[in-house]
Image 1 (cartoon, one colour):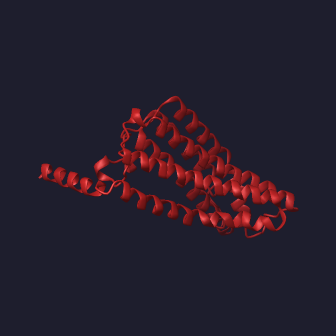
Image 2 (cartoon, helix red, strand yellow; image 1 turned 135 degrees about the horizontal axis):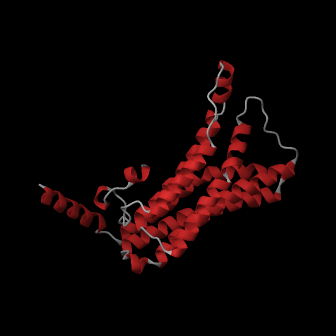
Length: 251
């Protein structure tokens, strides 16, 4: 199982936040089943091609399948990291995670429709007027914003329970960093919806806005890392000494 592969002891990863969730719980197992079903909905073809033409036709949908798979995998990675870090299973976490899983399933067919249409060799994806284009932005950008809003709320819930989790000042700082990260992604998706609402020439920046996700995340982490070093100048030295002591004990 992927979760077991990605699950490691705290001392074996470089995460500032100590991993508190080591065992795969029933909620996570259920989540894996939902993500697996979502991937199934994206399968290139349900039947094995019987002719060369059918095979080539199926291969045309490899790129849209790959794009959709990457999107789903990134969502799964973010969800898995949350449970590894905090191991939370309170009521709010269950509710937010349930809504997240529902949203992922709901958007599988629209995602498949969009990218399969765009990359179709027959150019079957056509929009009849500006209103249809705006509606697509409402659906996809709105869904994208909602998913990362849920991650923002999940991390906010973890920060609210920092005393129960025993989060250190360094860990709380890192939780806030990811809060800013997910809130920033949400804001860009909402901005895309706003551009779409304006319509006309604003439909172009409604697409372009997603290019800035990577640079924005890099900027947030760069600024936060710089601030982290100022607030906790001895953190990395302490961690290095701790690791050396553990290695010495093993030997």
